[in-house]
Structure formats: structure tokens, C-alpha cells
Length: 306
Image (cartoon, rainbow, N blue to C red; front, side, top):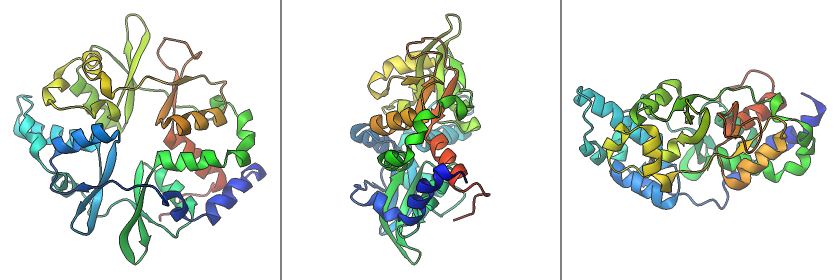
């Protein structure tokens, strides 16, 4: 570990997870809520996910992409002709939980060090339930990658050296780009198969970046047949659920990227040749990248299971 990362290692190993989730409101989904109601509630509350509860038991976490993926899979099995049946939206949240391969929710204990949470959220999970302790399965809180990066941003005075680290040092991922004429259902299928939460929608002929398409784009979905629209038209029809692409360049610092995502509650920033460049992005830097960068630098050994 480089000496510059010692302060980060210290506060991540001495600060309990409970400090992060203290005071954060926990919004939950009753298990008998229909998927249509879930999507409407997500749009109303401007959120992408929430824990699903049945009685006193936490069954797991449901997000927008889970809802649409479940409906898509159910529909594909029952309607091989490609017809989209809105009755699928009458399935319940608990149906989605039962369709998964595990009964265990993604969780961490409130008394564990913050580093455990960072490791969990950098290993493919975007959100986690916080239990009181190992023997007490009452839900103490619910945290997301956004919460973790906001916490990191609050410690930025101890990370001042990151202002000198350009994004080019860490941003190595090429974004997936899809043409605006691509059918939305095809885009969604590609995202699910590639385990992506966002793609860049571009105009291939004009070589311009039109907009991002992500889980947020699905939040206002009420008619499954909208998924048959070209993605460009889908985004125009559901403008209320869309957010503009926030662009940075590779010469911006890691610190600026973290501050931008934390203060604007973004899941990613798109990397372009310059901030006002309308051409397709050349990179993408996400919350997962931030957390992975921290974990790899403060604990370069192979990640231990929680």
C-alpha cells in the first residue's frame, strides 16, 4: 500500500458501517406490491431500488432493472411470438425474489468496518442491506454505492492528492454504444447479457452522443409495448425519467469525478475529448470504479469474502 493511502485505510478500517447508514431513511417494498406499483413508486420517489419485506423478514433488494428483466423473462417464456403482455406487471415483488437462485439478501453487519462495505459494493453489488449484527437480522439500514461515495467525498480533505491524479490513470473502460434506431428491448437484452447498467445512445451516421440509456430510463415505464420502440424514441417519450449525460475529460482529476458524482448523485460520468464534445464518449467512469480503486489501493491483496 502506498503511504498516500494510509489515511484512507485508517478511516475505512476504524469507522463502522453504522456511521454511514445512521439517519438514512429506509424505504421498503411490501412483498405483495405489484411490479407496476413498484415502478410507479420508484418514479414518484425518484429512486431506483428498495428492500423487499414480507412480515418481519427482509427478502432481498429489488431495483428497476430487476423488474423489467423479470417481466422480460416471463414474457419470453410465455409469449414466444414476442408479444408484450402488460399483465406481467401484475406479478408481485416477492415473485421476483422467489425467481432468484438465492434466498440470502446482499448484506453487511452494522458493526463491521467500512472497508467491508466498500469491498462488497466494489464486487458487483450496487446496494446492500445493513443488519444490526451477525446474530440480529433486524434491518439497521440500507446503503448504496452512492452513499459510500458520498461518504468518501466527505473525507476528501484526506484525499487531496487525488486532485493531481487524472482520470486517464484509472478510466480504462470503453463504453458500450448503441445506435438510436436500435429497438429498446434489444438494448435491454444486451445490457442484461453484458451485465451493464448503462449504454451510450449515439447517432452512428452523425457520430454524435444523443443520451445515456440506463436503469433510470425504465423508471417511468407503464406500457411494456414501449420497449418495442427505437431507443431514441423511447427516451423522447419518457423524458421525465431521463437525465442528461454529465461529461468530463481524461484530464479532469479523480477528485473532480468523485465530487461530481457525489454532489449530483450520479452513477457515472461519461468521458469525452472535451466537456462540450457531442461526439460519442471515449470512456465511462462509474461508482463501481471509484470503490474498486479505493479497495485495490488500501487492500491490494485478493478480496476476502465477508
